[in-house]
Amino acid sequence: MRRIVFVSAAVVALAGVVVYTASASGQAYGEAAPISGVKIPPGYRDWRLISVAHEEGNLNDLRAILGNDVAIKASREGKLPFPDGTIIARLAWNYDPLEESSKAFGHLQSFVAGSPKNGVQFMVKDSSKYASTGGWGFAQFDDGKAADAAMQNTCFPCHSTVKARDFVFNRYAP
Amino acid sequence: MRRIVFVSAAVVALAGVVVYTASASGQAYGEAAPISGVKIPPGYRDWRLISVAHEEGNLNDLRAILGNDVAIKASREGKLPFPDGTIIARLAWNYDPLEESSKAFGHLQSFVAGSPKNGVQFMVKDSSKYASTGGWGFAQFDDGKAADAAMQNTCFPCHSTVKARDFVFNRYAP
Image (cartoon, rainbow over the protein chains, first blue to last red):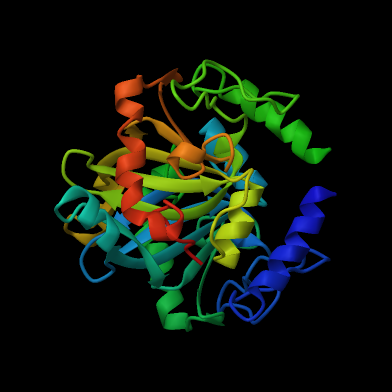
């Protein structure tokens, strides 16, 4: 009960800021990604943390990997392959130096998450529906708008590098 | 009900790995940190994400800032000061290059969370109990053991750099 009340409060507080709105039915919403048909899962920003990362080079971001309950359970158990129903979310932000930290330490010390960057990506496990791409449906949304097919066609070839880990780069950070 | 079942399953799966165990009563447990008396809050690894960061230099880690429900609500609203009852958790891990990603990109590209590093830290807001340190009680635990008073006495002076932000460095990453 407490949780339901809180979600409502958060939605009010964030109206106009977040790119998603809570769905009482728990259904996905918004436009579907090409190829996979994946939509943005409601409430994904409230999911628990799997791990964090920093990407160098052109990506140049800080990122967090969140998972739905199925993903968290499987990640903690470390069992592969991930079961159907797994959804993994990858959020990313600008890699920003933190001015206050530089003052505290006397030198550049900390990089923190700035504005959202490089879209929000999802991997949805459905071993029959997505059999041709390792059982995973891929999607990227930029400001809530699905990336085009050309962009999304780059997901599976890259993730094929980690086929031995069921196409998932991240590992659970304890 | 589903949530309770899941937590039990996770505890079984992670027995001997995690530094905390779920508490049915929701009470803090383990030894108390010196000065603040803060104990490790049960289930903190299940809290929602506030933000992520990378620390350079001697710290050299990737970190995540998680918050209890009070902290998440306050962080999203962006209102200061944080209300009593706020608990902010700072987790950190080794800053590890990801070999699989280097293969996929053809060059060093990704740094990911490795083994836990630099302890787990908490800030607990209680404006009367911790009036002498900005209303915050500080604590650090290394493998579940509280850091000594000398270590914990370094927290408040550093966080005083961001007194204007109620002594909190992090900002909510949308």
